[in-house]
Length: 166
Image: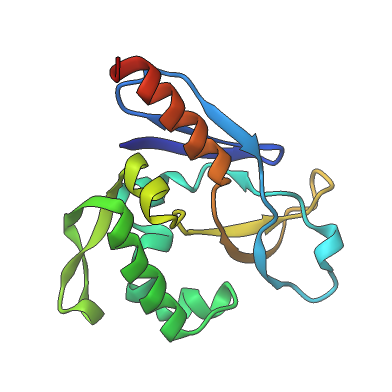
C-alpha cells in the first residue's frame, strides 16, 4: 500500500508499506489545469507540495465527486469528477468509513492505494493541486490535476518483489 506521496518541484516520490522509509522517485510532472489571468503555462513550476498526502487518505482527487465546485476550479466538469472518483476504486484496497460521497449514495471514498493494482490496471492516482510559479516567492498561479509518474510505481514494485518474492 502507498503510504506517502510528496513532491518538491523537481521530483515526485512515493513510499510503500513494508519497505521502510525508502523513497521511489521520478521527475515531477507538470500540472494541467486553469492558469490565473496574467500568467501562462510557461510560468508554471513542475508539481510541488505536500497536499498529495490527502489522496493517500481517500480525499482530494479521490473524492472529487463530492466537490463539484473544486472540479470546475481545476479545469474539469462534474462528469470528470464522477469519472475520476470511480476510477480510483479500481486501484485501492477499501472504501473510507467516514469520508462518504453523497453523489455516490454515501459510498466511502476510495482509500488505500494498492501498488500492484496501479501497475496491473494502469490507472495512476489522481491529485488535485495548486500550480506554483517557477520563480520562488510569486506563489500560486493556478490549479489543476496531476498524476504521479508511473516510474515511481515501477521502481517500488521492483523493490517490493526483491524484498518479498524469493
